[in-house]
Length: 171
Image 1 (cartoon, one colour):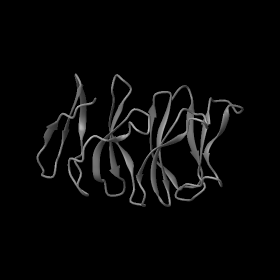
Image 2 (spheres, rainbow, N blue to C red; image 1 turned 135 degrees about the vertical axis):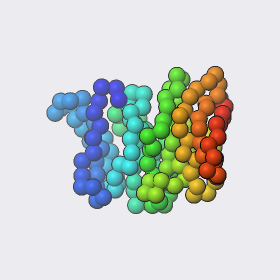
Image 3 (cartoon, rainbow, N blue to C red; image 1 turned 45 degrees about the vertical axis):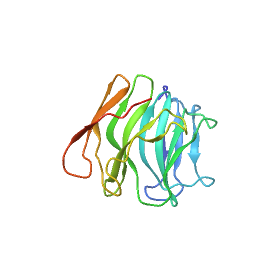
């Protein structure tokens, strides 16, 4: 995002990974997050967002959604998705709305359970689930996000195997 490249260095599934940001030059490549001061296990998922990046970091204590614009000052946690090592990933289902809001499907990673629609406007207070359509460990597998006026339409599979259309208000 924003003409920058983000990349991870470190051994997979080992603590001590580092996230770097680069403008494509040696002098413009620097450590953004990680290393001995902030060890983490892996980056579980990422999406380009506005002029930066949204990414999920796995720590021994759980998973957290972060946002960065490439600067240390604007790198922060948006949401601590799981404070236990159950897993997390961004699903391929997401949509950027005209106002910059990102609607995405978040899942518990390894088993793809508890997949529910979330939204973020890039702020802590603006990052929350749209709905828990399939309560508990079940998943709604929301997909096909389409904005219609002030409503977001999408298909989901609630607790049963049927597919329903949902229309939560965006505002």
